[in-house]
Image (cartoon, rainbow, N blue to C red; front, top):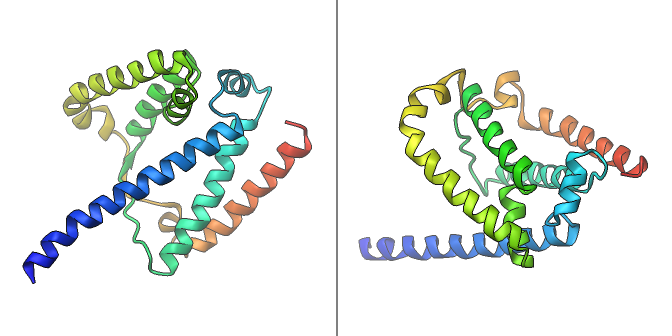
Length: 189
């Protein structure tokens, strides 16, 4: 019996990797089809002239939020939220924002842009990800005990904070996102 369990784990890990690859390719395809891998579209989003990227991301949040909690409700998945802190959000936001502002891509759109053959994403984006990850990994032990621990709020979620059922938060947030998407579309952005 032990041997069967031991051989099942590598199969599950391989299946998870294959699923991740398939969903990653699908995500990249949809980013490319939506225009989110184009530098001009991203810059126009940052200049508040074209809201294509915002619409894609809000649609993804809406779909993912409803989908993951529906799967949780059916017992298909268990959620294990990572602990958070104000320090983690501030540092993460600064790093993400700096990279986005300097190159005009986020990690997801860099991968899609590299797939499109854009040299700026391949040279600047991949180099930035590798160098930035290396620097962060080197600094992490000190940061973990320092600024990243500031304002720790653990694995708190909005439903936990409000002491309500998950759907008491999901339904109104989904409605707000849907209304926002409709408003953006009607405004011609």
